[in-house]
Image 1 (spheres, one colour):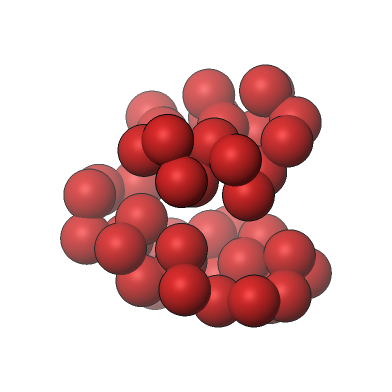
Image 2 (cartoon, rainbow, N blue to C red):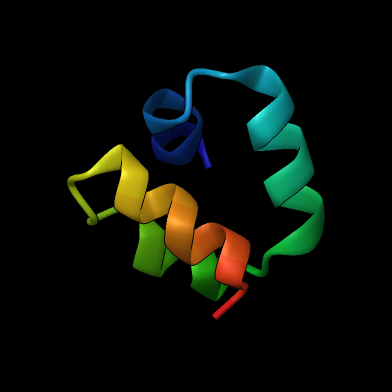
Length: 46
């Protein structure tokens, strides 16, 4: 979760996504290098 929060600097995004996504989603999103790609896939909710 710390790694995820470090990648997403906007507190509101972290709070919103932490309520919507499971732990497995975070494990998939963390290695993605592009912030735009991370946001895209996070919004898709896989």
